[in-house]
Length: 282
Image (cartoon, one colour):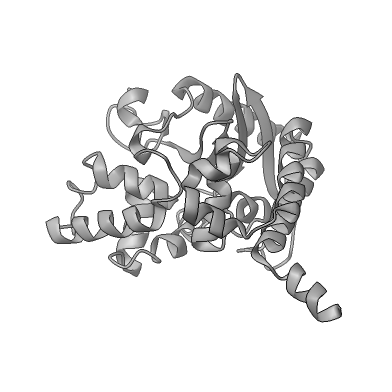
């Protein structure tokens, strides 16, 4: 009996459920929207009671099959698919203070260590979804060091890896209004400066285990947002840990992330801009 219990607890459904429970607990500890917190906990309960492995359901019915599960919705379906594809939940990593975007980009076969760092530093790409956006909106084609063959390899690798996460191409997925993202950025930096935000203890670049990283959870319109300062190696190297703000967003239909920075050059120099949406900011 104990062997069966151990195998059950080690199953994908139960491991993923425990991750979603942790997201819900961390959101509750950080005083996020209680409805958002409960959504993760309900998803965890559902996964534990699912009569088949969730990856089998995804393989058979795609993202739509996850979306049809009661109480899941598109954003949570994508998060489940993300975990099945990569074994990681970016939101959980960020809430734990353990997110490493450069290491994530290096998992793409056509992207080496140097290119991963340049993509993050120069284009502000922090996720595989953002990389796929850039691969199709012209940014990678115009980026030095990425020729046609490498661009094709990146596109094909991401298409295969992310195919089951989305019912449509990622560059057509809804994104929050630009003005809302900039307002969340303003609200976050204002609260961080005033010392009114809850602080978490990052696992990375924090040898003394200090709770220094402010976190903001806020809802605007139909979107839930989580904002934190970037805690990456490059942000520390450039002294941008209190400038670059990573914002996670989700609603019932979509989820994603972006980075807001102070523009260092060009017509928007000195202004806050959303990386990848500079034209809209202008």
